[in-house]
Image (cartoon, rainbow, N blue to C red; front, side, top):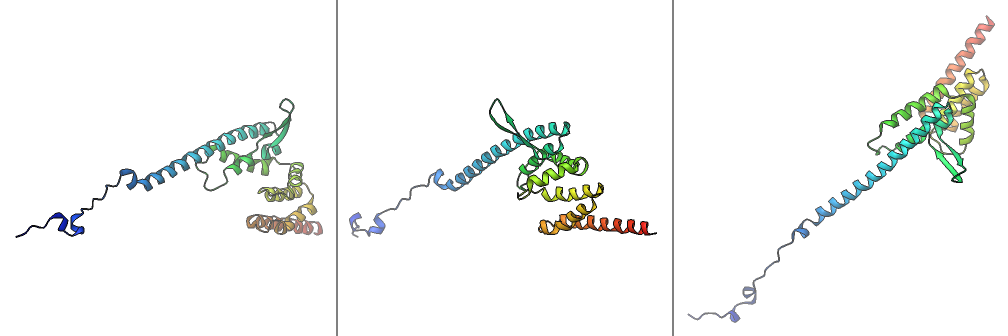
Length: 210
């Protein structure tokens, strides 16, 4: 029986295909890429968070100093002061600025000082703010985008009413829906204030006529 030489074998049988083994790096490159992206994201977010935290602490110190000095509007909004040595304006923070830094729902973790800033905002607006303070805030923010303008404008109406400036108070209550059409909560408060105001007016008229 004749033996078939290698040269006589079919080419497909003669050639043994050897596949090179895939390297570890090649097999796991997508895992490494994903891990790298996660690391970059965490590092970038961590740096941004740290910068925001430091700015928050600085603003809180500024706002606390203004509050203790009874400069409540400065404590609320912050202010700028010209530094004669550096020959430039220096910014001092307020509680509202602290809240704005962390207003995004994805900002986490939120420092404890942010809640203190919110509490101070509520205290200043509803317990400390004078008519003059509220008027100044409204005048300085007309035409600007300020999330606190509606709240303080309505508060100005309440201060007017408490001071006996009833017509001015009523004008503010009635104007809220037109000036702040997208703020339903503010509109509800204004409507409630207006209803109470009119009940008091009616009660006083009834008392005088009795």
